[in-house]
Amino acid sequence: MQMNREAKEQNVVSFDKRQNYKPNSEVYVIKPVEFDDAQTVSDFLKAGKTIVINMEGVQIDPAQRIIDFIGGACYGLGGDLKAISANIFIAAPHNIEVSGDLRDEILNESTLSPQLGKY
Image (cartoon, rainbow, N blue to C red):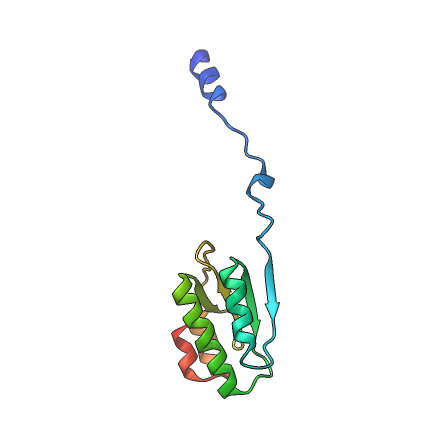
């Protein structure tokens, strides 16, 4: 038995947590003021960045257009767009997984158009 244990210990590999750190793993927070800001979010997505979009204070019609544009960009780039609260969304590139189970709760309280429920 002693020999098997020594053999197993030689197969153990230590992982340094810093190895998984990627210099481009920043998360940006953007509060859109106008529709053109949706392109800025899309540019960040193309660069592989994750973006938190704060839609608080944005009128419903422009907010809908902005979220639709960003949703299209996410789809086209293979990314993901999720609601984290009634007016806050996260857009992630294809290599970042966003998971959670608050979607139904958020949609019931959303002040934005019900159309946003598709995200």
